[in-house]
Every structure is written in structure tokens, then in C-alpha cells.
Image (cartoon, rainbow, N blue to C red; front, side, top):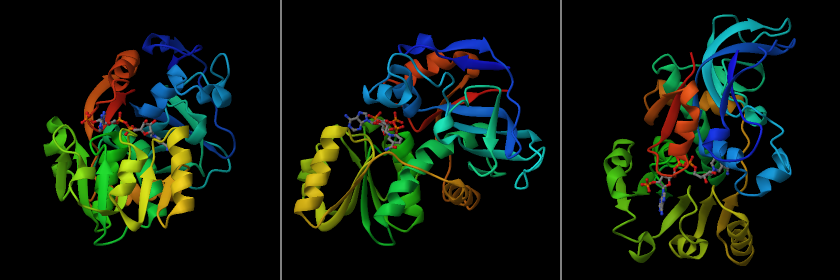
Length: 318
Ligand SMILES: NC(=O)c1ccc[n+]([C@@H]2O[C@H](COP(=O)([O-])OP(=O)(O)OC[C@H]3O[C@@H](n4cnc5c(N)ncnc54)[C@H](OP(=O)(O)O)[C@@H]3O)[C@@H](O)[C@H]2O)c1
């Protein structure tokens, strides 16, 4: 089968189209024929080993996992003998968790992994771009216990995580303020944000407003400034924090009544089912900036690495 393989950390060109062996499902696995995947911030960070800590988990000198890609949408081609949750022909979407390998024509997945039947009202490309930003946003929104009427500010509202966070917070009944650059204001408004601030024109920490929850999805604003715009018992989400911001967050948690949420996310099938429900009820829609073919993955990575995509970049596989 065809796959995009990388054997060394580096520039987008390390992503090479190769023929590799087609996998065979174990007894508890499905074999998925992948129709679409996505190029995400997590993928380019692993490709480049940025931050350096990537090397401590994924291989010090060279990557231990050679096929990236953490999200998928496709069709079940065959199943292991103990599989009961899915059948041949089912269309499913989801997240590979830490196994990656979705930059390929086929992938074996445990039937108990982070996957669910694909929503009928969107394409495979649409379904594939939902789980990365969607599960990240939902992981933190769940922990922050965002509820009806709360004032929530999403910083980085046009990115993969931010655009999902706006839609999920809105679906839960929050009053959502999205912060993005001028060119993305219409997009963020169209996702349901009640107010949109342009970070190139206005500094939200200076306008006197305070929020129940501030969700910084891009790590482009200092923790101390965000904390000043948070209610006394508010929640600050730092989903893209580096080590320094995590330490500042811990300190703020210890010395105030504010809660700081950060760290690497985890997810399960129920999170994918939650996103499926939002899509099927029209409360969430995929945001696709560009679509590339699997063979063009290096180009897709060069684009997403600039950090200014609108929502997501889909990859058509079959
Ligand atoms: N905790 C976890 O487990 C986890 C999971 C997923 C992702 N992440 C991290 O979260 C971060 C965001 O991921 P993503 O996939 O959403 O990224 P993305 O889709 O590339 O979006 C980045 C966003 O940043 C905005 N931006 C760029 N410069 C900015 C600035 N100076 N001020 C304000 N906004 C700015 C861009 O908007 P404009 O074009 O309008 O500037 C864009 O919408 C990444 O660093 C990723 O590694 C962490």
C-alpha cells in the first residue's frame, strides 16, 4: 500500500511517498481503508521534533514511529474474528491515539479505540478534520465545566483547536468571544461567536472585561496577562503551553482561587461520539482551509507549519 514515511526529523521534504506492507488486523481490530486524513499541528511538531521533548518520547536521534497522521475517515474493509462493534462496509472516523499511521492507504485500529460511525451529513474530508481540534477542545472544555451563560474567551479562535472550541462552547450555551486576526473575523463569527476581537487591533487584556473561562489555544499571549482578565475563580486553559507557561500556571493555581488547565490530552470513543452528535445536530461543522492529496503531504506540511491556517487542512487519500 502507499504511505507517507519519514525516517529522520526535519523539513517537510523528509515526508516521502513509499510502498509499504498492507497491515493485517488482529482479532480485536478493524482494517480501515482510509479515505481522508488531515495535516495537523501535532504532525509537524513530530516531524520536526519541535519542541525537543518530542525526541524523549518519539526517538532521540530518529523517529520510532515512521508514519504520521493521527486522524482518519474511511471504510471498514475487513475485521478480526472477535470484533463486534463494527462490520465490513461501515464508514468510521476518529483518532489513532498515540499509534499514528493515518498518512497511509490502510490502518488497523482496535475496535475499542477513539472511533465511531462517520456522521452521514459530511464528507470523509470533513469527518477527518474533526477529531484533532475537536477532541483537544472538548478535553479542556469538559474539565473547565463550561456551562450555559458563562463568559468564555477563545484566543486563537480560527485554528484547528480554536475553531472547534468556539463551536463546542457555543453548543453548551456559553457567551463566546473569539480572538483572531482581521482576515478571520468573518469565519469566527460564522462559527457562532457572539463577539469577535481582532488581535492586530485590540488587546483583550486592556479592555476592562473579565471572563469565566479563557481558552488560550495558541500560546501567543502571556499567562500573567490572561490571568488579569479572568474572574477571581475563573479557569485558564493553556492547551498549547510550553514548560514555562505550565510552571506559571501551577504557581497561579497554588497562589490564587483560579484554576489552570494544561497538559497533553487523552481521548476515547465517547469523545468522538460526542463530536458526531454535535455534527449531526448541526451544532458543529468542519472548517477546511485547503485540501491536498496524500502525495502532496510535504506541501501541506510546509503550509500548516506557518501557523496561520483557517481551521484545518484535509488530505484526500483514496
Ligand atoms: N495539549 C495538547 O494535547 C494539544 C493538542 C493539540 C494541539 N496542541 C497545540 O495547540 C497549538 C494550536 O494548534 P492548532 O492545531 O489549533 O494550530 P493551527 O490550526 O495552526 O492554528 C494556529 C492559530 O494561531 C493563530 N495565531 C498565529 N499567530 C498568532 C498571534 N500572534 N496571536 C494570536 N493568534 C495567532 C492563527 O490565527 P491567524 O492566522 O488569525 O493569526 C491560527 O488560527 C499548537 O501549538 C499545538 O501543538 C496541543
